[in-house]
Structure formats: structure tokens, C-alpha cells
Image (cartoon, rainbow, N blue to C red):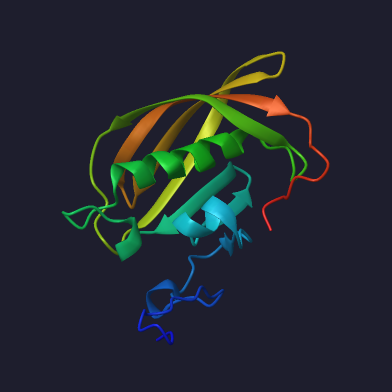
Length: 160
């Protein structure tokens, strides 16, 4: 509590108890420590022969009034997961032009949600991706993203 009686809130880099769980095999924690990525995280990814898959565990701060992942969180995650399909490496930068999503089912609190995309078209620096988001065997969302590749800009922070 501050001297004026207001409650002081501090941010921490520590995971809360609900954020400490065994990450499924092959996944690593994404090192997004600030900005919007931190607000919606923690987020995870794995790279294997099938490509890049990103994931998150539905926690209370991701939920709507029905205790399912909020549609805005699913769209945010789709942007990050499907956009990842255009990444060749950490120096591939992109911005979203359009994201079209079909909501098919809900992801309850505690679900481990995964998503990935497949490049289906390239025209110059514009890339079209078809993507899907799922938990277990349940498809939550499908859609299409259109992304623009951009040059890395000096002075702009990366993920960290």
C-alpha cells in the first residue's frame, strides 16, 4: 500500500503458480518479456519436421465470462501462430494485412491450445497463410491470414 492509501501494483517477470506447468515435449517458452506478447502470454513454440507450431495454456486472464478462451485472445493467438508460418528465421519480420477467422468451438480454462499455418500463396512480399487452432482433437478456429514481409528496422526491439 502506498502512503496515500492506494494499493501499489507491481509487475514481475516471475510466473504465477498457474503459469508453472509442465510444457509438452518439444515446446520452449517464447522469450517475449515486454509489450503485448507479455500481456497475452506466456506463449510457447516448437519447430520440427512439420514446421512451426505455437501454443498457450488458457489461464484466467485469457478467459471470457464463460471461462473459455476469449475470442479476442484466440484471434491474437491466430495472428501469432499463422504469421509464424512466414518466418524463415528470427530475422524474418512481418506485419498482418488481414486475418479472417471462423470460430468453431471453445477452449475451457486450463486447455493447452496449439496453432499453426501453411503458406498457400506468395506474391512479391505478400504471403497468404491458411491456419488452424486446436486443443487436443478439437478444432477451435480455422482461417486465413495475409501477411507482408518487412525489412528489419534499426532501433526496433525484437521479441525480447
